[in-house]
Amino acid sequence: MLIVIIIVALLGGGAIITLTGSWLIARAHPPRGRHIDAGGLRLHVVELSPNDAGASAPPLVLLHGAGCNLEDMRVALGERLAARYRVILIDRPGQGWSEGGGRKFSSPAAQATVLREILDRLGVARALLVGHSWGGALALTFALDHPQRAAGLVLLSPPTHPHLHRMTWLYRVLAAPLAGWLFAHTLALPLSAAAFGSGIRAAFAPQLPPRHYLEHSAAFLLLRPAAFLANARDMADLQAFLARQVPRYRNLAVPIFIIQGDSDGIVPIEKHAKALAAAATPQAKLIVLPGIGHMPQHAAADRVVAEIEELARIANSEW
Image 1 (cartoon, helix red, strand yellow):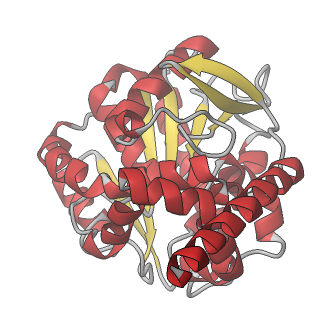
Image 2 (image 1 turned 135 degrees about the horizontal axis):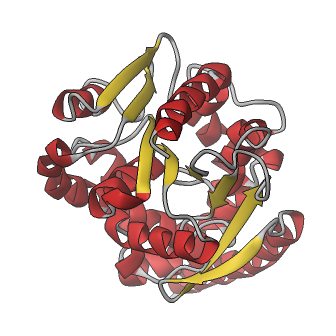
């Protein structure tokens, strides 16, 4: 009986901390853009220089990775690129300030459909997609499912093949319908908040995160229950999805720049970027960054921006 009381007390205390913490996090990091209805969801979208910059070139759509929101790509690349291009940043379903729709929106295919509808609402016929990590997998799927809408792809540290067992097993537990929901609404925030800084450092290794990264990237938005569960579902289902998608890479028909550091400990370059470059030849160009980890948009921003601009020039010649 005592054990039951202790468990109930822990869960109850965790629920109170989660409710309070979620309110404080939301207050500290309010939405910066507008909401657009697409795929039955309300998606948070930020546009930079939407009226005049880059009018003669395809817009750039920046897609964030797992555990992030659009602020990660905005602070790394968005502000710089907006000086010359129309830049569109999107909180993927369930992340940041975008509404989630449960497990049916956890696959890159479902999110690609939502992305297509967002571009329809924005009047964008074709776009150049820049995707980091999970966002890179989404960009790939978009180009395969909606090839007429993709002017080109810049993929940053993308998971492309089903070699993610170490990454996905825990997420499958966290995405379980009952246990995952209970954990997300009680213990996830208090337990994760204490270790959040070390987790961010591991994502950037061997580099260090930029100063004030947690604040500027609004990274704590992930710890709210809905976002925590959406991220767990995205990761839990990615392995099986990529296994089905790999045979389609030979059908890619847009120019692709794949940019990855050779010190990426999260998505091994040999099993993903290099494998994709081989499968998508001659469309793909592989750019290997010596000594760079999983976050090249921060650690090698100048090189990444230069490659994006190069691909934009290529896409512009066909625009």
